Length: 124
Image (cartoon, rainbow, N blue to C red; front, side, top):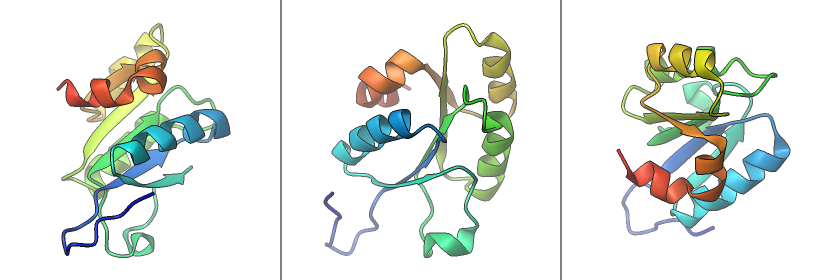
């Protein structure tokens, strides 16, 4: 993982996921985008982020162990400048609807997240 050392702030992504397999796949893709990644199951307190604010928050909305919609609301409030993106199965329409209402700016299918994250993030 390479971090920028030229004085500019390192881009930082917060990955909210409780699934080790998906988190590992996504972390690798995010690091390829030159993002420093912190994976968590809850939204970290601002103090624990060492003064860094994520530029991207990626949430596993389809996780049965996380309440992704609630996490999205907290992220929108705590990290108002961050881009909040969620992912879940394409048939999870209720989750998608609730996530949009909670302020998730973009919702990806699992396939988009796992196979083409960079392309999916670049398409506004």
